[in-house]
Length: 608
Image 1 (cartoon, rainbow, N blue to C red):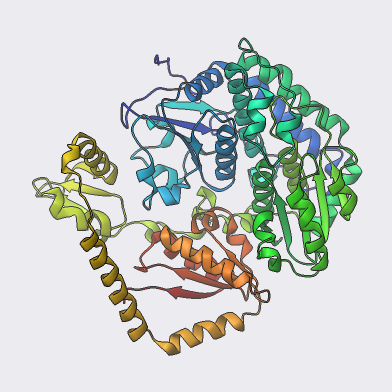
Image 2 (image 1 turned 45 degrees about the vertical axis):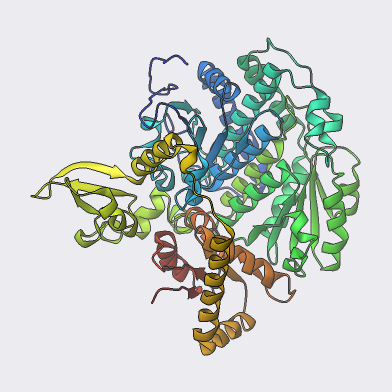
């Protein structure tokens, strides 16, 4: 791949990390200007908000560098191995959705590793020749920066700049416009890849056996269709059709239903509609005055239906309105007393006919089989609600403590800086094997190599250690591989049994009793959170409690909580933090934020 000239918004090939891996960043920071928007009420939906988002999308189409988009699409097509997408908050939903979209094509290996999991063991899934795509509006997310030693755009092999004029919310709060253009860009690139590869209807349908989208897809393969034609002639035209034909009375009624919701609002969808439902749910929750969560329909039909209580609103998103899973979910949710709203794009569909309210999103046709209109519609509704409530920066940012503005409001330098005793220092002549404890225990992901007078010489990162280890691993002879025999397995099982016996013989029954009583007596919701494998345990425990039918419980990923989802916590809620060591930075940073929201905090640890 040839190098390109760099410019303020150029695609840059900077092989700083490793010459065998391609790391790509997608951001909207360059060229953005913030302008205060007037606070308006819900009636402004028809007059101001929709045209505003349409205007900013036009700005995106008119200013996107198509050479860079073409280079990005080509990089994905030419990928020699797997493609990983990652992002934080709503950019994470975009990354996850784009990853699944590419994977659904059937000829690209693509997956989404959450950055927090990558930093806690998941980085081992990335091998040489893989591509890692990082999506971030501001390119300043700590979790993404921690994957590398320098700012994202400067150290990635390629940077794709998505032009963003400004957000439609006051102060650029909820990033609705940036989320929309990230989705527009990703979907259009996927469409270009499909046409380049000549994907047929039959090939695509095989990857979507449970949905009607593969069966009804009308798609003409064209090896000559350039990315520029897709951006300017197709996607932009179809978005204009959406804005010109949307029923604003329906949109108005939907916005009022969300604002007037007496209790929680749940969103659900299948496949990529599920990602859109998840994104809209998190966007609403980030406002701080609406209880909103995503309910996977499969999980709901297998136990999680107990998460629905009377007076809840359940929003079902489906392009065709004929998904069996959502249709099966409706009578179950109705029996629980929920008010149901469907968002669909096909006239006279079965889902709309059995819900209490239906929002029709006009769809002329799509250039690829993945709906963007629900994202645009949802973002516009959220912007309307934000303006109607007069949400201020001071009210919004405490719900986003890991964002730049949130940090400036909540934390002082002394709260974030590492003190001298916490710095991972190493002398130049020290052996790495002797410094592993210093590297891992200080939570910085690196060693500061200093001279006798503590002057910094260089920084040795855990990434340096990992890649040196990989080189040794791949160059080792297969005859040196470790073989585990039956006796070894027997010894391991006996050791495991002894450890379990130790737990049962030594755990504090009074503590266990108090914990169980706190869960039973919980006045409201119970949230569980953890990092890495403790996160899986927290998620499993949350689902188990929810399945009982009389406890409201949910899993709260700590990284999402620090970027958006802390607003899901209300006074009198319980937050259970699970950590083996009790030293997880993500959980420690979450505690003061959750306490400020009025939560009762419980920790489960194994280190005294």
